[in-house]
Image (cartoon, rainbow, N blue to C red; front, side, top):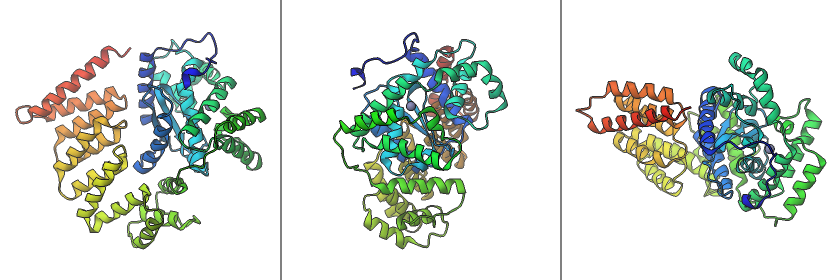
Length: 442
Ligand SMILES: [Zn+2]
């Protein structure tokens, strides 16, 4: 689909090559994980990633799309290098339907497939790739409080880059055009994009002094709206297939994460209230409402996962069986995998807990949290060599080579090769991999 479009990019700018894009992606990922407040809640992540990967599966692009959530009330989203897409919690909270939320994600995916980022700028010669990635992140994410170092770095290079990254009407049009097609192909309402942007701009005109970030980079003009509506009309309108309950539950989770305590009596929806209370309440006195909710929504993954998490307390054997079945149905759902592994561990099945994670992690796209869980499991068993080894892998998975090397050294020191020859082999293999990455670093 993307290939059939004429090249609308600005002439004169050369795309950087794939190897540079991959390196920049790694550095960008490292920056995201170390300098920004990322949402770590597995259920929220799993939900957003489900939408993102479903949309991306219609884009026919070889990049490994990865979706992260920035815990930031700004209504914003961005497309970074090498398929990294960020969505601010403010955007998730401001959407009324999953279609609206998906419309922005689809738009960002289109920026990636059309290589807009790499067409808009060339890497600044004066910066190494790490500083360049930090600067790029600061501009794309719109950090409210840039660090002192970043402020200096921003200087002229930053202003230059910001200028280059500024909204390009042609790119935005292209991203709208392709994004609406993606939305439609993925079974969402193609009108959702025009609708959402129109609503945001009207809300802002009524209530706010400063437009939401996404409107600063994506001004809603009459012609933009008209084009989006016209584009959507050429596509057969579908009724969305998506359960509206999911977005409401996820929004409630996000609110609760930021309150650090259970809230949830603020929703008109009794199912959402029930979910909020049970997810964050230590006492779990009201399972009744969940049984009721599941009767209304028997296939809802979030409700089912919550039910099984609670069931682990009083009927762990059966809860584990059902979690295993759920994990088989949704093999890419990291939230379910993590809960299952933890359940094994709580039931004294340490070997099974670690094996479940070890077997699964290499095939998962997002490995960081899983490797960290593994590291924690081994640490709790006082098996430090393994704990350090998995900490090294966790860091490697987000491009943190320095830290990875540091933990690998610790692992080496803690390990006794004659007792654990298998681990020794793994350590040596990882050391080799890290060494070869030094040589190709710059
Ligand atoms: Zn855009």
